Length: 264
Image 1: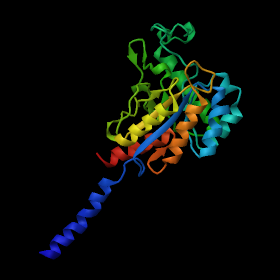
Image 2: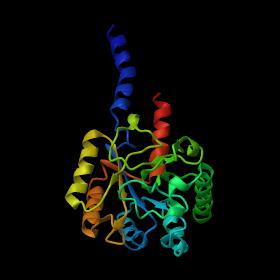
Image 3: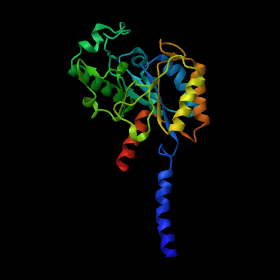
Image 4: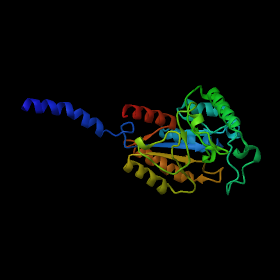
């Protein structure tokens, strides 16, 4: 009887141990640093500090924007370092009729698009990005968070093109709760370093995925975070690497897919 109990516990213990492991690549949470709109500050301000700390991020690039098209060789180097070049369409079309969206040009107003035009432009952006980084797998970010053309959603129509897609809803979720084609992200605009660090601490506590959505970092965009606040966040991540998995969204999304398949 004693032998039976001992043998039973020996079999049971590995299962309990496996369940107790941290689900985020063996860490307590995952953090993804995403940067939108192919800004010059991505190359001038962001890449140097990521490199210095050994981090990689995801850069969502509208491939017609001059910050991308005029600095192609530099973006090729960014990809070689392990950063993700994410798809943010050709022209960054947004729905222009909503309040505060007067800046959207009529030619790039989603209300004036057909579904086929949008899908063609997304596919063309993928072709351009593959020519730069040689990769077939990447993620997508909905420009302005808009997911419809007229009254029709295009979310289901891009699933075969991308590993995942990032939205703009400020939320962090546990691994089993995540919709890979509407991953939440915290839009950053003027927050202090302490506020950014507080979000990471919350993610650690909740064992969640936290995605940061940056535009300007030290300028160049009306949505901006100071260099000091951005630096404080990244140094906190570095100091707590034992608890935090920092990776591009394509890597995190592929990990989530594999996790869900194993834990159905």
